[in-house]
Every structure is written in structure tokens, then in C-alpha cells.
Amino acid sequence: MRLFSTSLASMAIALALPVPALAEEAPAAPAMPAVTEQVPQGAPKLIVAIAVDQFSADLFAQYREHYTKGFARLLQGAVFAQGFQSHAATETCPGHSTILTGVHPARTGITANSWFVPGIARAAKEVYCVEDENDPKSTPEAVTVSPGHLLAPTLGDLMKHANPRTINAAVSAKDRAAVMMSGHDTDAVYWIGDSGFTTFPGRRAGKAAAAENAVLTQRVAAGDGPLPVPGWCGNVDRATPIGDFTIGTYRFPLAAGDFKAFVNGPRVDTATAEMAVRVVDELGLGKDAVPDVLSVSFSATDRVGHAYGTEGVEMCVQMNVLDQALGYLFDQLDARGIDYEVVLTADHGGFDAPERQQLRGNPDAVRIDTALTAKALAAAVTQDTGISVAKGPLFYGAGESGSVWLSAELNEAQKAKVTVALVARLKANPQIAAVYTEDELMKIPVPKGNPQDWTIEQRVRASFVPGRSGPVQMLTRRGVVPGKASPGKVATHGSVWDYDRRVPMLFWRKGMTGFEQPTPVETVDIAPTLAATVGLSAPAGTWDGRCLDIDASEADSCRR
View 1 (cartoon, rainbow, N blue to C red):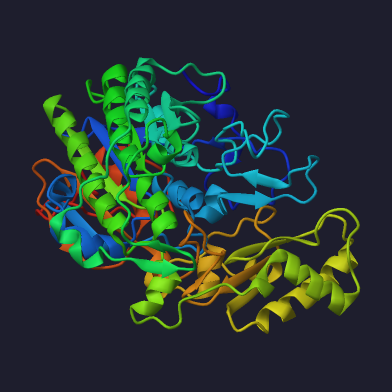
View 2: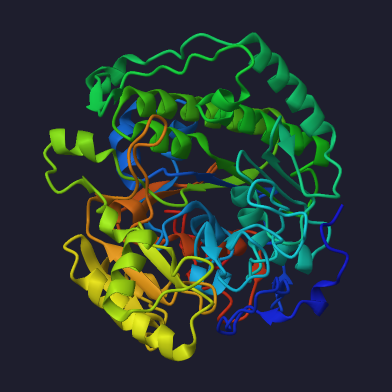
């Protein structure tokens, strides 16, 4: 079953063109460039694209010696330890949007997990990245999920356009992860909803979802004890106080019937791997001469990182469960005799709780100044300018690195005056590293070259979408963590700094000659690299990235 009945030829936005200013209505899906398919001799029958949410290069380096299952196999392949989500908007939706489109968020149109549209004709001004906000039934609490905001085709979209027999499927605990990696022309897309795996409105979930949901229901109803702690977790198994609670020693016991705890802990990665295998069986992925695509995004690392930080026993337990989940997925594909090529990367990195950072030699790690919230900034700017608004807030966003949007009640003269005052207030705060306006950013070309060397403004430009990003961009200094700590929310990501931008990129296929490559590469390099292995040829300008030669033998995998 296809999500859209409209033909690809009718899609209105050309991939190779700059992203235009966006209207409030949902944009048309991207038109396909003139791709051609010539399946090379020995091309894999299945591409398995894996994203591990919040899996920083730092976590990979810290735990790689302890992996014995799935990661152990990937470490035999092509290891790019210095991959980059090059842009500033280091969040789940923008990061996932780069992996199989091969373009930066400035071209995918996905500038954040959500953005504000102050003039939208509904009470809730915030729009979710995979929401059809034009559906009157869609609310922040019950979103109508759609890929409509994604302006670039994915590898699966392009492969299906070249050969409709290609199967394009995706599985994740998060809707935005599955949708961003699969794209517009899909055969099966699953994420976990209120009670189990679900899919798009109007699309019937298949037998795979019914079977896995039955298993999940039984597991949750039965509950479970604490998860085992590997011996190599000992050095991180210690409590860190944060206010009136602690982190660092939790082992994820599962109370009977607690579905929320199940989906927010390591066990959800096991369920994701199981669901992926069920989808392989139901759709017959990798069973004919036409290569298929399976996208799998594992979400638990992100949920554990937010709730407990990255440096306690919780993350150590999670790394062990993730490794086993990957091992299960690969073993099941092997048992089915499928010739597959796998890539694993991440949508962004992450930063530990600043309270623990301070105890471990980082005095610059702090929580964000409350003067940088939208409410506090609005009060200060109103004091400076005398300008206020009658109905909604003066500013939306703020309080973290990224966009600030202005009230739709302001006229152009007021917007100009307010912007000047806002920029001045931001630049005067010692926690702010840089401030840019839309006019300044749009004078900067979308950057190219080594992502490690990009300036802050280049990083911001790579994820700035005019008409969707806020007209003022505030970038916090290294180590500044947004939000007040509370049980279940102690750490995050989203900055322009290396701990949020650097991610591993690992490629493996049976029989390949592996290697380790420290040169910085980008996640936008993944799509053209995989396209080469399946013989998909696309016009110049289709990708922001480049094909990587992922075989250390004399053969060039980019020129098969």
C-alpha cells in the first residue's frame, strides 16, 4: 500500500533547487530527479539503514571495546569514527532527515523537531515536523502524522521511482524517525503509539504489527525485574545528586502494566529489532533481484540519555541492550539467507547532565539562564522598546540553542525594532556564543568542505529554512544545557558543538574488506554511498554529500 495516490511526476518541488520561502500550508512532496537504475553485479538485495538516536561519537568511542554482538560485526567493516551531523539543529527530526536524503536540513526543510508558525489559524502555534497541521483533527496531543514537511526524496523514494518493485519500509519507536528515513513513497512505516506499533492514519497495520503488539502486551502485563548490569559498567555505577533526586544507578525494573516505562527504557530497542524482522518476513524484503530498503531507528539511547544522562550505569546498561538488539537483527537476517548491506549512524549526539559534568572536571557545564526564556526576553524587550502584543506572547521558542519567532501581531516596523532590541539583549548575555538574523544568514551560502572546520554561522545556515526557521537565531555557549532538571529529564542535545554534531558512521557487508578512517565525513554522504552500491545514478546536485569508497580492496565501491 502506498501513502499517496498522486504520481511522483506531479510532485512540485525539485530537489536540486534552493528551498523557497514556505507558506503555512503543507508543501507538496518533492519531485524525483531523473534517476536511473542499473543494478551492478553483486549488488546487495537489501539496504539496512540504522540510526541510533543520540548515539554520539563519544559514546561509540567509550563503549566500542565492550561490544560483543551487533557492533562487533560492524567494527569489521568500514568504520568512520568522525562522522558529522554538520548542521546546528542537532535534534531527532533534522538529523534523521539527512541520513537517506543526502542533503542538509536547509534542503530537507526539517529545521527542528517542531517549529512555531505564529500566524497559523489555530490555538496551538507549534507545528510538529511530521504533522499534517492542516488536518483539523491534528493537535499537539494527537498529531496526524504525515511526511508532507520533508522537501527532499529519500533513497527509498528514489529507488522506488527507478523501479517500483523496490520495497521501502521503516520501523522505529518514534514516528518522526521512521517517517524521515522512509520518505514519501513507502510500503510499510511503523512506530510505537499509545499501546504498540502503529502506522499512518488511514493505512491498515499488517500482521507483523499485530504479532509484535501481542508480544509487547504480554511483556508489559507481566512486568520484569531490573536489567542486568555488565561487569564493565562498574566505573559508572555511582549516584550523582541533582537537587532532591539522584541519577547514575537505575536498572530499569518494569512494573506490571507500565507501558510508558517500557517504551522509555532499553527494552524498546529489543522490540524495535523484533518488529524489523517481522516486517522483513511479511514483505519479503531482500528476496528478489530488485534491492529493497529497510530503515530502522533505535530510540532508547535518546530516551535514556534525556532521563539519566550519558555517563551513568543507565547508559551502560542501554549500550549492552542495544548491542544485543543489533546482534539479534543481523543474526535473523543471516538465518534468512539475505544478502544485505548495513549502515549505522546517529541523528545527533548528546551532552551529560551538567551536575555530573562539573564533578568530572568540566566547570563550564551549566544550566541555561532563565533570562533567556521567551517570557523573560519578551519582558525585557518590551521594557526596552515599549512594544507588546495583546493576545499571544511576543516571542516563541528561545530558552535553548536555536530559533526565536516573533508574534504575528507585530507590523513590519515593530518587528524591526523588536529584532534590534532582542539581538542586543541576547548578545549581552554571557551564555550566548552568537546571534544571527535571517537577513545575515541568507547572505551566507550553504557550506561545503570539511564539516569539522565550519564556523558557527555555517552550521546554522546548513539547517536554516526561510519561512520555517525563526528570524532570530540564538546559539548558546559550549556546555550550556537548556531546561530545569527534574526526574526523567536531566540532559539533552541541540547545540552547535561537537558533542552534539559528531556521530559514528559504520558500513558492513559480508565479504567486504574493512578499515578504520579518521577523516571527517558527513551523514549526507550516506545516501550517495548506498546509491552507488545498488547502481542508482542521479544527476549532479542531487546530493549535498559525496560517495564514500567503503571497501578497502582495490575496487572502488563508488564506481561499480
